[in-house]
Image 1 (cartoon, rainbow, N blue to C red):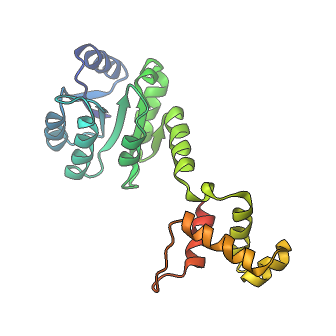
Image 2 (cartoon, rainbow, N blue to C red):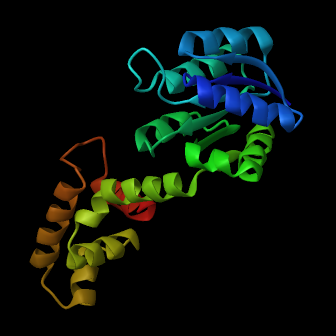
Length: 214
């Protein structure tokens, strides 16, 4: 396996180089910033780029952005991102193209050499490797962003019946309420899901799609 390593901490960079070389992995370049990473990937066409998320000059997301740019310049290059903390927005961006061959691990995982090396092999083979803490926070974020979770239990019940294709009259009979009450619930549902009046959209269909996605 041929690897380009991007890490601004000299001690960690040299430690990773030694770890990889002891595992019979060829480190074709070890760099300290984003632009150098892009140049190294473009020149060497490695199997995997191992990248720190935060690098100079601002220590925010330079590594991630450089990794995205490097993948565009050398399609097929797998990327394994290392981060000190779970950065959900960065994980989202890394996974956005859906192409596979990506991984996001906390740096603590590097201490488990077998886990780290297995992650490298997996992303090299086109797989996706996510640290368990990243997965947990991604799901938590999805749940928090789900507009259906803002509905009351009764509104979710009404939405479930809408998803079954029932009319307001049929929903009223099922719930033993008046059609007027169902209409009121329906309008609240549309408002909470952000579905305004639009002649080009069928709000009951869009509400059903939101329910199914949830």
